[in-house]
Length: 433
Image 1: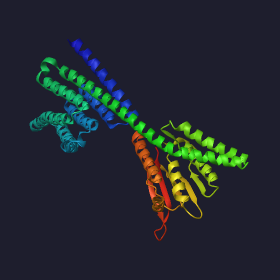
Image 2: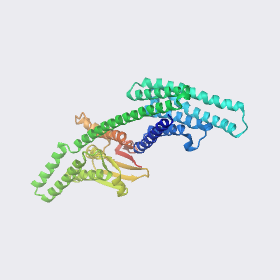
Image 3: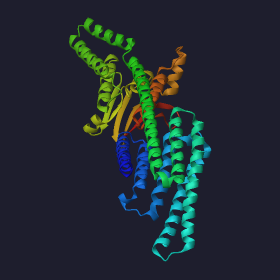
Image 4: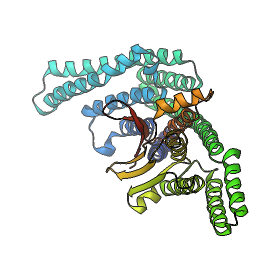
Protein backbone atom coordinates (compact mmCIF):
# COMPACT_ATOMS: atom_id res chain seq x y z
CA UNK A 1 0.00 0.00 0.00
CA UNK A 2 2.84 2.33 0.89
CA UNK A 3 4.54 1.68 -2.46
CA UNK A 4 1.30 2.39 -4.36
CA UNK A 5 0.81 5.59 -2.42
CA UNK A 6 4.33 6.76 -3.30
CA UNK A 7 3.74 6.02 -7.00
CA UNK A 8 0.51 8.00 -6.95
CA UNK A 9 2.30 10.91 -5.26
CA UNK A 10 5.11 10.74 -7.83
CA UNK A 11 2.68 10.90 -10.78
CA UNK A 12 0.70 13.69 -9.11
CA UNK A 13 3.72 15.89 -8.46
CA UNK A 14 5.02 15.28 -11.97
CA UNK A 15 1.67 16.43 -13.37
CA UNK A 16 1.80 19.57 -11.20
CA UNK A 17 5.29 20.46 -12.39
CA UNK A 18 4.26 19.93 -16.01
CA UNK A 19 1.18 22.14 -15.59
CA UNK A 20 3.19 24.90 -13.91
CA UNK A 21 5.79 24.90 -16.66
CA UNK A 22 3.24 24.77 -19.47
CA UNK A 23 1.06 27.58 -18.05
CA UNK A 24 4.09 29.78 -17.39
CA UNK A 25 5.18 29.37 -21.02
CA UNK A 26 1.66 30.31 -22.14
CA UNK A 27 1.85 33.40 -19.95
CA UNK A 28 5.13 34.46 -21.52
CA UNK A 29 3.56 34.03 -24.97
CA UNK A 30 0.15 35.64 -24.34
CA UNK A 31 0.56 37.79 -21.19
CA UNK A 32 -2.91 36.82 -19.99
CA UNK A 33 -3.09 37.39 -16.17
CA UNK A 34 -4.99 34.18 -15.48
CA UNK A 35 -2.07 32.10 -16.83
CA UNK A 36 0.37 33.40 -14.22
CA UNK A 37 -2.24 33.30 -11.43
CA UNK A 38 -3.03 29.70 -12.31
CA UNK A 39 0.71 28.93 -12.29
CA UNK A 40 0.96 30.39 -8.77
CA UNK A 41 -2.10 28.40 -7.69
CA UNK A 42 -0.60 25.11 -8.93
CA UNK A 43 2.70 26.05 -7.27
CA UNK A 44 0.79 26.64 -4.05
CA UNK A 45 -0.86 23.22 -4.29
CA UNK A 46 2.55 21.65 -4.89
CA UNK A 47 4.28 23.21 -1.87
CA UNK A 48 1.25 22.64 0.38
CA UNK A 49 1.42 18.93 -0.43
CA UNK A 50 5.22 18.90 0.01
CA UNK A 51 6.17 21.83 2.31
CA UNK A 52 9.53 20.25 3.16
CA UNK A 53 10.70 21.19 -0.35
CA UNK A 54 11.02 24.82 0.73
CA UNK A 55 11.68 24.02 4.39
CA UNK A 56 8.36 25.12 5.88
CA UNK A 57 7.57 23.44 9.19
CA UNK A 58 4.05 22.29 10.00
CA UNK A 59 3.31 25.23 12.31
CA UNK A 60 3.69 27.66 9.41
CA UNK A 61 1.91 25.59 6.76
CA UNK A 62 -1.02 28.01 6.94
CA UNK A 63 1.11 30.57 5.06
CA UNK A 64 1.09 28.29 2.04
CA UNK A 65 -2.49 27.09 2.41
CA UNK A 66 -4.06 30.51 2.77
CA UNK A 67 -1.99 32.02 -0.02
CA UNK A 68 -3.07 29.15 -2.29
CA UNK A 69 -6.73 29.75 -1.40
CA UNK A 70 -6.31 33.41 -2.29
CA UNK A 71 -4.65 32.51 -5.61
CA UNK A 72 -7.56 30.12 -6.29
CA UNK A 73 -10.21 32.83 -6.00
CA UNK A 74 -8.11 35.37 -7.89
CA UNK A 75 -7.72 32.87 -10.72
CA UNK A 76 -11.48 32.32 -10.96
CA UNK A 77 -12.06 36.07 -11.05
CA UNK A 78 -9.39 36.68 -13.68
CA UNK A 79 -10.42 33.71 -15.82
CA UNK A 80 -14.21 33.97 -15.67
CA UNK A 81 -14.40 37.76 -15.09
CA UNK A 82 -17.32 37.21 -12.73
CA UNK A 83 -17.10 40.76 -11.36
CA UNK A 84 -18.22 42.16 -14.70
CA UNK A 85 -21.60 40.47 -14.23
CA UNK A 86 -21.92 40.36 -10.44
CA UNK A 87 -21.50 43.39 -8.20
CA UNK A 88 -21.62 41.08 -5.16
CA UNK A 89 -18.66 39.04 -6.34
CA UNK A 90 -16.81 42.24 -7.20
CA UNK A 91 -17.17 43.37 -3.57
CA UNK A 92 -16.23 39.87 -2.37
CA UNK A 93 -12.95 39.94 -4.30
CA UNK A 94 -12.34 43.55 -3.23
CA UNK A 95 -12.49 42.64 0.47
CA UNK A 96 -11.01 39.15 0.14
CA UNK A 97 -7.44 40.23 -0.60
CA UNK A 98 -6.92 42.60 2.37
CA UNK A 99 -8.83 40.22 4.69
CA UNK A 100 -6.58 37.27 3.89
CA UNK A 101 -3.45 39.41 4.21
CA UNK A 102 -4.54 40.76 7.62
CA UNK A 103 -5.44 37.27 8.88
CA UNK A 104 -2.10 35.96 7.65
CA UNK A 105 -0.26 38.66 9.58
CA UNK A 106 -2.25 37.99 12.77
CA UNK A 107 -1.81 34.23 12.51
CA UNK A 108 1.90 34.63 11.77
CA UNK A 109 2.40 36.88 14.81
CA UNK A 110 0.55 34.43 17.08
CA UNK A 111 2.44 31.44 15.68
CA UNK A 112 5.77 33.18 16.23
CA UNK A 113 4.82 33.81 19.86
CA UNK A 114 3.75 30.21 20.30
CA UNK A 115 6.84 28.69 18.65
CA UNK A 116 9.55 30.97 20.03
CA UNK A 117 8.41 31.62 23.60
CA UNK A 118 7.15 29.49 26.43
CA UNK A 119 3.99 27.60 25.59
CA UNK A 120 0.84 29.62 26.15
CA UNK A 121 -2.40 27.69 26.11
CA UNK A 122 -4.50 30.72 25.20
CA UNK A 123 -2.39 31.56 22.17
CA UNK A 124 -2.24 27.92 21.09
CA UNK A 125 -6.04 27.67 21.35
CA UNK A 126 -6.46 30.93 19.39
CA UNK A 127 -4.11 29.78 16.62
CA UNK A 128 -6.05 26.56 16.15
CA UNK A 129 -9.40 28.36 16.23
CA UNK A 130 -8.33 30.91 13.55
CA UNK A 131 -7.02 28.10 11.34
CA UNK A 132 -10.26 26.12 11.81
CA UNK A 133 -12.49 29.15 11.13
CA UNK A 134 -10.50 29.96 8.00
CA UNK A 135 -11.07 26.40 6.79
CA UNK A 136 -14.83 26.69 7.21
CA UNK A 137 -14.83 30.22 5.77
CA UNK A 138 -13.14 28.76 2.69
CA UNK A 139 -16.09 26.40 2.23
CA UNK A 140 -18.56 29.26 2.55
CA UNK A 141 -16.59 31.38 0.07
CA UNK A 142 -16.31 28.39 -2.25
CA UNK A 143 -20.06 27.79 -2.13
CA UNK A 144 -20.69 31.46 -2.86
CA UNK A 145 -18.26 31.33 -5.77
CA UNK A 146 -19.97 28.21 -7.09
CA UNK A 147 -23.31 30.02 -7.01
CA UNK A 148 -21.90 33.09 -8.82
CA UNK A 149 -20.17 30.85 -11.34
CA UNK A 150 -23.43 28.99 -11.95
CA UNK A 151 -25.12 32.31 -12.73
CA UNK A 152 -22.77 32.79 -15.68
CA UNK A 153 -24.35 29.78 -17.40
CA UNK A 154 -21.72 29.25 -20.06
CA UNK A 155 -19.38 26.43 -21.04
CA UNK A 156 -16.42 27.81 -19.11
CA UNK A 157 -18.46 28.07 -15.92
CA UNK A 158 -19.46 24.41 -16.23
CA UNK A 159 -15.82 23.31 -16.23
CA UNK A 160 -15.12 25.45 -13.18
CA UNK A 161 -18.27 24.31 -11.37
CA UNK A 162 -17.44 20.64 -11.74
CA UNK A 163 -13.77 21.17 -10.84
CA UNK A 164 -14.57 23.27 -7.76
CA UNK A 165 -17.25 20.83 -6.67
CA UNK A 166 -14.82 17.90 -6.90
CA UNK A 167 -12.24 19.84 -4.87
CA UNK A 168 -14.73 20.68 -2.10
CA UNK A 169 -15.85 17.05 -1.85
CA UNK A 170 -12.23 15.88 -1.69
CA UNK A 171 -11.50 18.35 1.13
CA UNK A 172 -14.46 17.05 3.12
CA UNK A 173 -13.42 13.43 2.56
CA UNK A 174 -9.87 14.25 3.60
CA UNK A 175 -11.12 15.94 6.77
CA UNK A 176 -13.46 13.10 7.72
CA UNK A 177 -11.47 10.03 6.58
CA UNK A 178 -7.88 11.21 7.00
CA UNK A 179 -6.97 8.26 9.23
CA UNK A 180 -8.08 5.79 6.55
CA UNK A 181 -6.98 7.41 3.30
CA UNK A 182 -4.34 9.94 4.37
CA UNK A 183 -4.29 12.69 1.68
CA UNK A 184 -5.37 10.47 -1.22
CA UNK A 185 -8.81 12.21 -1.55
CA UNK A 186 -7.07 15.57 -1.92
CA UNK A 187 -4.60 14.17 -4.45
CA UNK A 188 -7.31 12.71 -6.66
CA UNK A 189 -9.68 15.66 -6.14
CA UNK A 190 -7.01 18.23 -6.89
CA UNK A 191 -5.80 16.31 -9.93
CA UNK A 192 -9.32 16.13 -11.41
CA UNK A 193 -9.94 19.78 -10.60
CA UNK A 194 -6.72 20.89 -12.27
CA UNK A 195 -7.47 18.67 -15.25
CA UNK A 196 -10.85 20.37 -15.71
CA UNK A 197 -9.29 23.80 -15.24
CA UNK A 198 -6.72 23.07 -17.94
CA UNK A 199 -9.55 21.95 -20.21
CA UNK A 200 -11.36 25.23 -19.47
CA UNK A 201 -8.23 27.26 -20.24
CA UNK A 202 -7.79 25.36 -23.51
CA UNK A 203 -11.42 26.01 -24.42
CA UNK A 204 -11.07 29.73 -23.68
CA UNK A 205 -7.83 29.90 -25.65
CA UNK A 206 -9.67 28.41 -28.62
CA UNK A 207 -12.47 30.98 -28.22
CA UNK A 208 -9.90 33.80 -28.14
CA UNK A 209 -8.27 32.46 -31.30
CA UNK A 210 -11.66 32.42 -33.03
CA UNK A 211 -12.32 36.01 -31.91
CA UNK A 212 -8.84 36.99 -33.09
CA UNK A 213 -9.49 35.50 -36.53
CA UNK A 214 -12.80 37.35 -36.72
CA UNK A 215 -11.09 40.60 -35.76
CA UNK A 216 -8.42 39.94 -38.39
CA UNK A 217 -11.10 39.34 -41.01
CA UNK A 218 -12.81 42.58 -40.03
CA UNK A 219 -9.51 44.42 -40.28
CA UNK A 220 -8.93 42.92 -43.71
CA UNK A 221 -12.39 44.04 -44.84
CA UNK A 222 -11.67 47.55 -43.62
CA UNK A 223 -8.29 47.51 -45.35
CA UNK A 224 -9.86 46.35 -48.60
CA UNK A 225 -12.42 49.17 -48.35
CA UNK A 226 -9.55 51.64 -48.10
CA UNK A 227 -7.81 49.86 -50.96
CA UNK A 228 -10.97 50.24 -53.06
CA UNK A 229 -10.97 53.97 -52.33
CA UNK A 230 -7.31 54.22 -53.28
CA UNK A 231 -7.32 52.16 -56.44
CA UNK A 232 -10.86 52.95 -57.52
CA UNK A 233 -11.85 52.82 -61.21
CA UNK A 234 -12.20 56.61 -61.09
CA UNK A 235 -8.61 57.05 -59.91
CA UNK A 236 -7.25 54.53 -62.41
CA UNK A 237 -9.25 56.09 -65.26
CA UNK A 238 -7.88 59.55 -64.44
CA UNK A 239 -4.32 58.21 -64.40
CA UNK A 240 -4.75 56.43 -67.74
CA UNK A 241 -6.37 59.53 -69.27
CA UNK A 242 -3.41 61.60 -68.13
CA UNK A 243 -1.01 59.13 -69.75
CA UNK A 244 -3.11 59.13 -72.93
CA UNK A 245 -3.08 62.93 -73.01
CA UNK A 246 0.70 63.02 -72.64
CA UNK A 247 1.10 60.56 -75.50
CA UNK A 248 -1.23 62.63 -77.72
CA UNK A 249 0.84 65.71 -76.90
CA UNK A 250 3.93 63.68 -77.91
CA UNK A 251 5.38 63.97 -74.42
CA UNK A 252 6.61 60.39 -74.46
CA UNK A 253 9.20 60.82 -71.72
CA UNK A 254 6.69 62.37 -69.32
CA UNK A 255 4.17 59.66 -70.21
CA UNK A 256 6.74 56.96 -69.48
CA UNK A 257 7.71 58.61 -66.17
CA UNK A 258 4.06 58.91 -65.16
CA UNK A 259 3.33 55.31 -66.16
CA UNK A 260 6.39 54.16 -64.20
CA UNK A 261 5.17 55.94 -61.06
CA UNK A 262 1.68 54.53 -61.53
CA UNK A 263 3.11 51.03 -61.89
CA UNK A 264 5.18 51.43 -58.72
CA UNK A 265 2.16 52.59 -56.73
CA UNK A 266 -0.08 49.83 -58.05
CA UNK A 267 2.54 47.15 -57.39
CA UNK A 268 3.35 48.46 -53.90
CA UNK A 269 -0.29 48.45 -52.82
CA UNK A 270 -1.22 45.13 -54.41
CA UNK A 271 1.87 43.42 -52.98
CA UNK A 272 0.72 44.24 -49.45
CA UNK A 273 -3.06 44.24 -49.67
CA UNK A 274 -3.12 40.73 -48.13
CA UNK A 275 -1.01 41.93 -45.19
CA UNK A 276 -2.76 43.00 -42.01
CA UNK A 277 0.05 45.45 -41.28
CA UNK A 278 3.05 46.95 -43.03
CA UNK A 279 6.12 48.86 -41.95
CA UNK A 280 5.83 52.57 -41.42
CA UNK A 281 8.36 53.07 -44.22
CA UNK A 282 6.15 51.20 -46.73
CA UNK A 283 3.14 53.34 -45.81
CA UNK A 284 5.17 56.51 -46.30
CA UNK A 285 6.39 55.24 -49.68
CA UNK A 286 2.79 54.67 -50.79
CA UNK A 287 1.83 58.18 -49.69
CA UNK A 288 4.76 59.76 -51.51
CA UNK A 289 3.98 57.93 -54.76
CA UNK A 290 0.31 58.84 -54.51
CA UNK A 291 1.06 62.53 -53.90
CA UNK A 292 3.62 62.68 -56.69
CA UNK A 293 1.13 61.27 -59.18
CA UNK A 294 -1.66 63.59 -58.09
CA UNK A 295 0.67 66.59 -58.16
CA UNK A 296 1.71 65.71 -61.68
CA UNK A 297 -1.89 65.25 -62.78
CA UNK A 298 -2.95 68.58 -61.29
CA UNK A 299 0.00 70.35 -62.93
CA UNK A 300 1.89 71.06 -59.72
CA UNK A 301 -1.00 73.13 -58.33
CA UNK A 302 -0.13 72.12 -54.77
CA UNK A 303 3.04 71.43 -52.80
CA UNK A 304 3.76 68.78 -50.23
CA UNK A 305 6.52 68.27 -47.68
CA UNK A 306 7.61 65.16 -45.81
CA UNK A 307 9.42 66.17 -42.61
CA UNK A 308 10.63 62.84 -41.21
CA UNK A 309 12.86 63.02 -38.15
CA UNK A 310 12.83 59.38 -37.15
CA UNK A 311 15.61 56.80 -37.42
CA UNK A 312 15.36 54.62 -40.55
CA UNK A 313 15.60 51.44 -38.46
CA UNK A 314 12.60 52.55 -36.43
CA UNK A 315 10.63 53.25 -39.61
CA UNK A 316 11.31 49.68 -40.72
CA UNK A 317 10.66 48.17 -37.29
CA UNK A 318 7.33 49.81 -36.44
CA UNK A 319 4.28 48.38 -38.21
CA UNK A 320 0.86 49.96 -38.78
CA UNK A 321 -2.31 48.98 -40.68
CA UNK A 322 -1.97 49.14 -44.46
CA UNK A 323 -3.26 52.41 -46.00
CA UNK A 324 -3.55 54.19 -42.65
CA UNK A 325 -2.26 57.60 -43.79
CA UNK A 326 -3.17 57.53 -47.49
CA UNK A 327 -6.97 58.04 -47.12
CA UNK A 328 -6.33 61.04 -44.83
CA UNK A 329 -3.92 62.53 -47.37
CA UNK A 330 -6.43 61.92 -50.15
CA UNK A 331 -9.14 63.67 -48.14
CA UNK A 332 -6.85 66.62 -47.46
CA UNK A 333 -6.06 66.91 -51.16
CA UNK A 334 -9.54 66.51 -52.65
CA UNK A 335 -11.70 68.20 -50.03
CA UNK A 336 -9.30 70.68 -48.52
CA UNK A 337 -6.68 71.89 -50.98
CA UNK A 338 -8.45 71.52 -54.35
CA UNK A 339 -11.30 73.75 -53.16
CA UNK A 340 -8.93 76.48 -52.03
CA UNK A 341 -7.68 79.53 -53.89
CA UNK A 342 -4.05 80.51 -53.60
CA UNK A 343 -1.11 78.52 -52.23
CA UNK A 344 -1.91 74.94 -51.34
CA UNK A 345 0.38 73.20 -48.87
CA UNK A 346 0.36 69.72 -47.38
CA UNK A 347 2.72 68.68 -44.58
CA UNK A 348 3.47 65.15 -43.36
CA UNK A 349 5.53 65.35 -40.19
CA UNK A 350 6.93 62.47 -38.15
CA UNK A 351 8.60 62.83 -34.75
CA UNK A 352 9.98 60.40 -32.17
CA UNK A 353 8.60 61.31 -28.74
CA UNK A 354 10.44 58.61 -26.82
CA UNK A 355 7.72 56.07 -26.02
CA UNK A 356 5.70 56.83 -29.13
CA UNK A 357 5.85 58.33 -32.60
CA UNK A 358 3.74 61.30 -33.57
CA UNK A 359 2.67 61.64 -37.19
CA UNK A 360 0.94 64.87 -38.24
CA UNK A 361 -0.83 65.25 -41.58
CA UNK A 362 -1.70 68.91 -41.98
CA UNK A 363 -3.16 70.99 -44.79
CA UNK A 364 -3.99 74.67 -45.23
CA UNK A 365 -7.22 73.95 -47.12
CA UNK A 366 -10.74 75.22 -46.64
CA UNK A 367 -11.40 73.06 -43.59
CA UNK A 368 -14.08 70.49 -42.90
CA UNK A 369 -17.05 72.86 -42.42
CA UNK A 370 -16.46 74.61 -45.74
CA UNK A 371 -15.85 71.32 -47.55
CA UNK A 372 -19.12 69.96 -46.23
CA UNK A 373 -21.04 73.03 -47.39
CA UNK A 374 -19.42 72.78 -50.83
CA UNK A 375 -20.50 69.16 -51.18
CA UNK A 376 -24.05 70.00 -50.15
CA UNK A 377 -24.24 72.87 -52.62
CA UNK A 378 -23.08 70.48 -55.35
CA UNK A 379 -25.92 68.11 -54.48
CA UNK A 380 -23.67 65.59 -52.70
CA UNK A 381 -25.45 63.37 -50.23
CA UNK A 382 -22.49 61.46 -48.90
CA UNK A 383 -19.33 63.05 -47.59
CA UNK A 384 -16.37 61.10 -48.93
CA UNK A 385 -14.04 62.66 -46.39
CA UNK A 386 -16.07 61.58 -43.39
CA UNK A 387 -16.25 58.08 -44.88
CA UNK A 388 -12.46 57.95 -45.20
CA UNK A 389 -12.05 59.13 -41.61
CA UNK A 390 -14.67 56.68 -40.36
CA UNK A 391 -12.92 53.81 -42.17
CA UNK A 392 -9.60 54.83 -40.65
CA UNK A 393 -11.08 55.06 -37.14
CA UNK A 394 -12.62 51.60 -37.51
CA UNK A 395 -9.32 50.24 -38.79
CA UNK A 396 -7.49 51.68 -35.76
CA UNK A 397 -10.05 50.24 -33.35
CA UNK A 398 -9.81 46.74 -34.82
CA UNK A 399 -6.02 46.93 -35.09
CA UNK A 400 -5.66 47.87 -31.40
CA UNK A 401 -7.93 45.03 -30.36
CA UNK A 402 -6.21 42.51 -32.60
CA UNK A 403 -2.59 43.29 -31.66
CA UNK A 404 -3.13 44.89 -28.22
CA UNK A 405 -1.44 48.02 -29.49
CA UNK A 406 -2.07 51.66 -28.75
CA UNK A 407 -2.66 53.59 -31.95
CA UNK A 408 -4.69 56.79 -31.72
CA UNK A 409 -5.95 59.41 -34.18
CA UNK A 410 -7.02 62.95 -33.31
CA UNK A 411 -8.66 65.49 -35.64
CA UNK A 412 -7.92 69.17 -35.06
CA UNK A 413 -9.78 71.81 -37.06
CA UNK A 414 -7.41 74.73 -37.60
CA UNK A 415 -8.81 78.26 -37.29
CA UNK A 416 -7.36 81.76 -37.37
CA UNK A 417 -7.79 84.40 -34.69
CA UNK A 418 -11.21 85.27 -36.05
CA UNK A 419 -12.34 81.65 -35.94
CA UNK A 420 -12.27 81.12 -39.71
CA UNK A 421 -11.25 77.63 -40.94
CA UNK A 422 -7.59 77.28 -41.88
CA UNK A 423 -7.43 73.62 -42.76
CA UNK A 424 -7.26 70.33 -40.90
CA UNK A 425 -4.58 68.70 -38.76
CA UNK A 426 -4.73 64.94 -38.17
CA UNK A 427 -2.45 63.63 -35.41
CA UNK A 428 -1.57 59.93 -35.22
CA UNK A 429 0.01 58.65 -32.00
CA UNK A 430 1.84 55.34 -32.47
CA UNK A 431 3.03 53.75 -29.22
CA UNK A 432 5.77 51.15 -29.36
CA UNK A 433 7.70 49.04 -26.81
